[in-house]
Length: 388
Image (cartoon, rainbow, N blue to C red; front, side, top):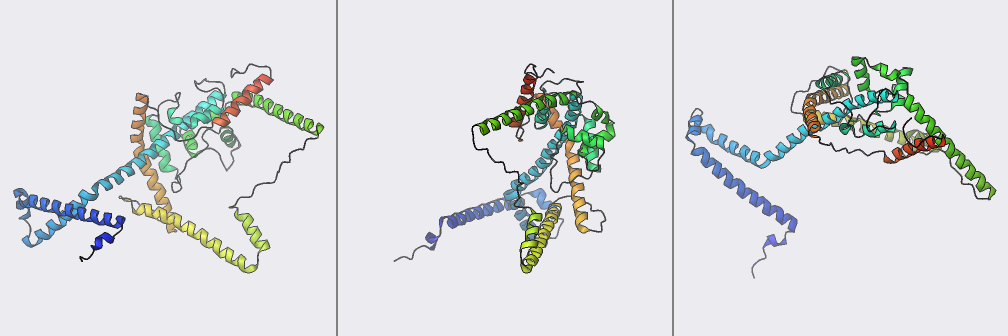
């Protein structure tokens, strides 16, 4: 009886890999034979090789064919990786174009609140929050100019932004916090760094001194609405008491976070035995050290994969030196790609193309805010509109 073919005992996954490997080897063999024949029959190339020692040519050709095959096999993959790298910078640059527009929107908010301008698509203060989330499609903003780009590039190179935990999700249109921060001149400022840079170079801080006429009117109507809600709530409580209905209890105690380190430390220090306290101390320190090290390891890994020179300034701490070099590199690359993103942005505006926004809108908050103003107007004997 003929012995059973061992291949038939292979699982399908392994057999598929074997078949694929054989097919790829056959293709590699055919391509290398074809390419070698092309080299041998190319008279111009043979004359070029005649300038070198004959004993070295064969090994060179073999190595050349290996690299040609690898380029044929994997070149598209690496090309895609390079394209994705370029796309990353362009995408980031588009995001920062939005930050340039945020400053323009905030300046308009200051003027609008002072009743110095009217804007199509803006009826109340909360509308600036909505447009902030869809900034690249905001219809009443002027196009970003080359001078805007140059100013932002200057900002990137001078302000030492933090890119290792990349996020600039500032509260760009928080009028009250920004204005209060400017007027109080507190050390812990709520003014975005980009706004500070812009004010320094344009001298437009006078906008923060304009009166908040619209905002104060809105707050007046909203206060009427809140007081009325409280009144209705109190009346319901009185009615419930009159009817002997159970009064719902409200727990005013604060929530405790699962990640609250201070509470955990308090419990370990006051309710646990000495040995477990000591173990927890070294465990916590070890975990934190691992987190800190992984932070710098990730930065160094990214820098090591960069295919260009990245200078590191002299520093007494190698971690801090690598960190600063990373932020400096990111700022420089972003500044380099801003003009390309700007060209694409101008083209989109010219063609009337809408830039998709991935951020959620505050539809529920907007609805409550709108109702509070209109209800307040009605309570004050005024029309339910925004003509005030």
